[in-house]
Length: 252
Length: 222
Image (cartoon, rainbow over all chains, first blue to last red):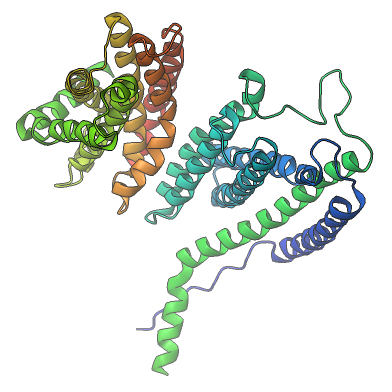
């Protein structure tokens, strides 16, 4: 009796993903170089904060992208839980987005802490926004740990989707905490209702560019992580095909 | 659903009453935690009296973890979880039953811990209505959230380490709200402690609703 080994499935739309990844990668590299040049060379230091103002070209954009990443994770989780749209791809997207979100959240905490040291005189303060951001970080680290628990992929994906939606409840509270409570953290610098931005000229241009650059960087890393998640799932599903092929090759 | 909830709660509480794990192990553990807090603060009575409410709720959270882990580990052997799935009981009912059983154990632990905080730390607890209302709402929230995350981590090899990582950050608002309400009741902070009860009620309502809706699906899949 001959054992039939099923053929390996083709990776879906491989070339499209590759092309998008290449374009986003190049755009990210160019954007980061431009941001470094504008932020460190062209943009002047601030009167009040001196050179530390340059953190404004990293911190607000990274913090905003953190919320976007967790938002994408929650939406993808919702799409996975919804029976009509259920597909493993939503689960992979949620996992990829949460992972990038945790990375950006860590960058937010570190850049915020450095800013706090030079403006408030302390690395950390028990402020509502800071504490909630740290909570968000820990909650999503827990979510990532849950993703790595193994077992049946469908059961794991459902568990993770529910956890992501619960974790996302923290995001609006975190985002609006500067408006709801008297926190040490300053309010919005650019988008102020009925008022002009607090910065102008090269500082404003560089800050706006930072949002664009970090958004493109996020999209690029997200896409790469999504590919890795998909490949890992494929390996989990079809890994035995390779194993059988290897054993057969050994026998020849 | 309510009948199923009573059945499941009765079953869990009967198992606890017969095994006596809560009374013989968890209650002494709770008192031990209070003793360790006493050593950590160098038996400084004024400090302990002031931070007593916060330490009380931290001890409750630690005991909650044990109660949740125990509630789900009971069903890991002898195919008990399969039996529960095949029993035809309503998912929401099973959730409410398990949460109620955990809540009853937590209430017993809270009574013991409150006694310990008053005797060992010298915390002056006044306003019994505020204290009891806080306990009821906080316990409902802890039991509901604990049951949701308990079923998610049940059956996993790493459940002992994963459950605290998932549950503790999520129940932080309960720790915050309940501690502030108790601090106000103990007269440590000025202001009304009643306003924190809305946070506790909202937390409990969210997790109770979510648990009733999603528990059946989660139980099927783990």
